[in-house]
Structure formats: C-alpha cells, structure tokens
Amino acid sequence: MPKPLSFKDFLVVDYAPGTGEYISYQAKKRKKQQGAGSNAEYASYQPEGETIEEALTHAQRIKRRQQFRKMKGRIKLGRLRALRRTPTMDVVKRRAKKKARLLILKRMTRGKSKAELGFAQRQAYEKKLDKMGSRIDRLARRLIPDVRKADRERKKSALHKQTTDRSTSTKPKSGAAF
Image (cartoon, rainbow, N blue to C red; front, side, top):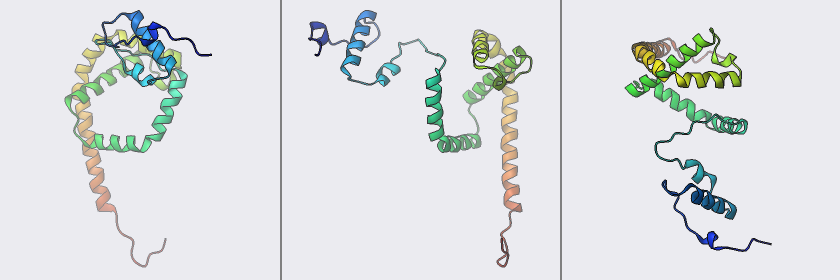
C-alpha cells in the first residue's frame, strides 16, 4: 500500500545554491523516491567554487572502460587530428605540468613507473603530488621550452616520414602477382 501524501510531498524547492541543506536534501530524496528525473541532474549539480575530484570506484572504472572501448575509433581519430595541429599555450602548459608530475613521481618512487605501482600506492602518491602544487608549477614552467621543442621535433619527423612514404611507395606492375 502506498504511503499517504503529506504537505511536504507538495513542497516545491529550488536546487539553487543558498537554500538550506536539509530542505535540498529532503527535496532530492522525495524526487528520487517518486522516480522523476535522473541521476545525471544530481551528478551535474555542483556548488560554485567547489571542485569534486574523487577517485573512481571499481564499478565506475569498469563503466569507463566500456565507454572508451565503444569510442576507441573516434578517440584515435581525434588524437591524430590533435597531433597534426600546433598546440596552444594552454595545451603546452598542461603537457608540461603532466611531465613535471611524472618527473617528481619518478623521483619519489625511485625510478618506478606509474604502471608498476599498485592501485593504493598510486592513490597515495597522487595525494602527495596534489600537495606539491607550487613545486610542480615551478618545474612545469621550466619544462615548457622542452615540451615545445619535443612537439616541433615530433611534427618535423612526422612530416619527414609522410614525404618518404610517398616517395618510396611504388605501384605494383600490372603483371605482378601476389
């Protein structure tokens, strides 16, 4: 038998930041019980100025793996397209920051790569790295010229490889059998 309705069931609440936590919680709970709306609404809600960066659960990892498997072809094409473009300064900074994090991680793990670490170890090291923000930023600024140079070299070698592939490729003769 369904639960009898009360006044609170008809209360309309705006989910905007600034409303009381308890009211928002009750409204979300009622909406969830009624089956209206999806979890996407709640997942996308994020108060201003707050960032949520939590480690993925095992189930979330499996779901992401399935999504990436489906999108593999598109991701590959996008990556190739992006590699052909000259990166913007934001992209260069992001790459430099990633490289700086990896360098510091290598130093902390005494030369072990990230793949060699266990899940819990990796999480612990990531937590330590998050606390080293200013140190990583300083190292990243010093690495920017190296990252740009590596990008130019990669583009030059890719261009050179393309031209040599075109010049060395020959069409088989009409009588040749394979």
